Image 1 (cartoon, one colour):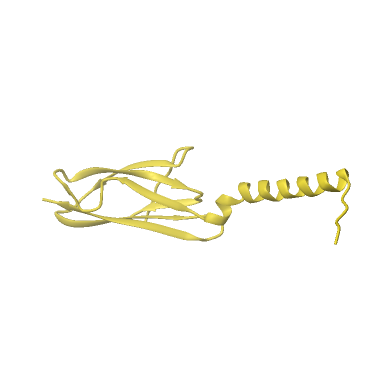
Image 2 (image 1 turned 120 degrees about the vertical axis):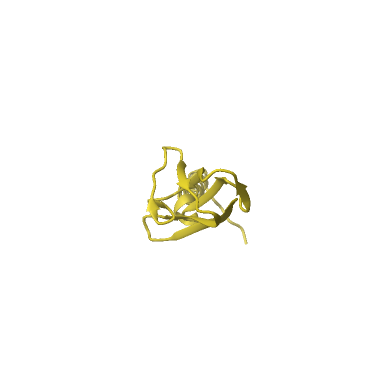
Length: 113
């Protein structure tokens, strides 16, 4: 079986493959969904003061909340908020969602002595 392709057909096939790869590359954020990372403080950290700064990054989001209170990010997806801790164990939860309703969350525990 012999396949006889002209240069024009070969270029069309190559262009089509490149176009499909480009579309998949640009759609990667839609495919992956939202994401969130709490960078400061670390899980299990012991705090010495009742007011701490919680910060992290997010990607592909339409909404972000810190302990069910809406917060905002900068253009690169970085966020930072001050939070008042109560004595003992505190659980900090950050939830994100995208335009399609997909949600993710990350929780950490912080102990105030």
